Amino acid sequence: MEEPDDLMVESTIGEALLLATDHSLLVLGESVREAIYRRTERIYQVRREEIPGKLQVFHLGLQDMLGVGGTRVLERMITKNLCNRLGLSFANRDDWTLVDYVNAMSEERDETRPQGRKPRVIRETNESEVSGSSSEPDLLLSE
View 1 (cartoon, rainbow, N blue to C red):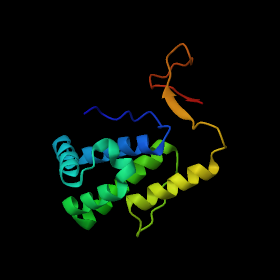
View 2: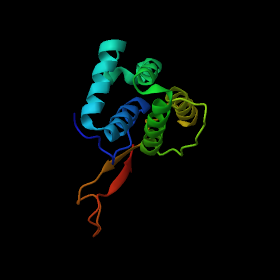
View 3: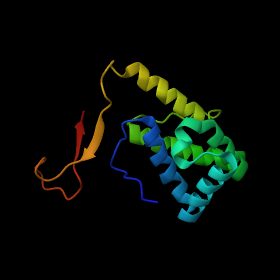
């Protein structure tokens, strides 16, 4: 599985959620991340790509595998990473799960996005687009 591109804010919450989940599970090690995905698919019939649409089932699967405490810690990591990818601030709510956070983000983005306008995406630029002497990748906001 490829490393998530940490420089890109995804255009949809679902895409960003998958990358945030990949990145957060990697803290446990690549083999553990893959084992969690395999078990989630085998036992709960949720493939990695289906997680955004079956988030409650994924949450319950994590609780089964990691316990309530382990799931709470991992879901906070996923949520913080997701907020970062979407350019949102993280506000800790002790009684919220990943499902609650994603639902709240979805509602907020739906309410604040102008009708008919696509979400903005941050992308890496090449040298011809931006002049500067920094060795760090430059980022541009595009529609």
